Image (cartoon, rainbow, N blue to C red; front, side, top):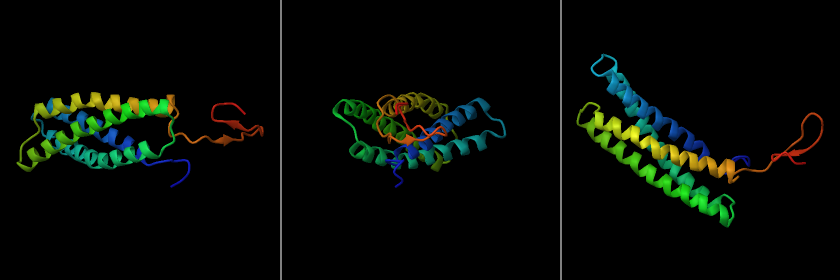
Length: 164
């Protein structure tokens, strides 16, 4: 793996979050659309996003667990990593439950239901909290960041923290 990317978790997680957020938005749009002719296409797109997000989130969780054990961190940072991990696993289980529920409904030929749209919109909250906590790990606690040195045009070598 390239040295600049210490693990695959950041790559998978961004796609997972985007797919889930789009699924929730599309389910909500389908409910607003009601019986309009294009509502069925929106539901199909929502389901594809939901199920693709659920499948990809399995890799996201695996990569996150790998990162937890392989990315360098100290004891003070481990507290934040553990908190993020707890939120991430709970959030993954919530979304997997909804994805399986909706897969069963789709297999039975059932249309999208307001309750599923509501569950998805509500499930965006723990998804956002988990993503925020992950961002805090990287940007505030500097976990998973590979220190680099850059040499700008003036020839002065500068670290990522702005110090030479």
